[in-house]
Image 1 (cartoon, rainbow, N blue to C red):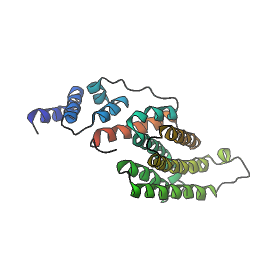
Image 2 (image 1 turned 135 degrees about the horizontal axis):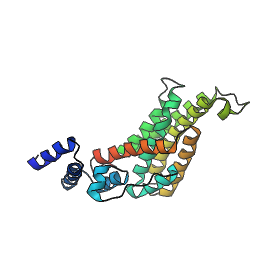
Image 3 (image 1 turned 45 degrees about the horizontal axis):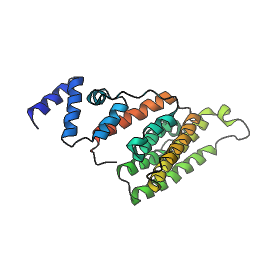
Image 4 (image 1 turned 90 degrees about the horizontal axis):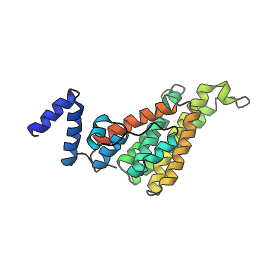
Length: 228
């Protein structure tokens, strides 16, 4: 590593934004960071990436489905990642009611694993995980009193059930992307379903968006260019 690179890293560690931007550009030139990843990080509001590219950060969306649609230029894998990150936000609502039941979290992890390594093995794992998350949701739902108004009478149970459903839908997004890698509209529709389920799980759209954006930014800047 040359002295210039070491100096940029030192200054970046000290909080120098201009150095951080220059370091990102150096990583692109060295083939360590894909320019499309840098552009995505900038679009997602990473300050150094925005400075490096001149890209304006996106506006906070009123609807998650609208945000999901803006990610399509970066490919269906990025849209699946965003869907999984959004679903992960509400999982604690399920896990408080079913301690130790990791099936919904496994579905989110399986969706991410497919993004990391698309192929028959990860598709099969996502399919199994989706079924597991749905079974977990159904088992939790058996505690509900369907004679009353579930959402009003037992909000935590209602939210926990839909959190598990969101995890199921995230894994389903990976399966849809695997079957139709050019089917962006289908995936946006699936993401819209996730948004509806997240609302029933009591999720706040700006909070979900912020958490998902942080995850996506970290992936964009930390992953090598060849990874989907």
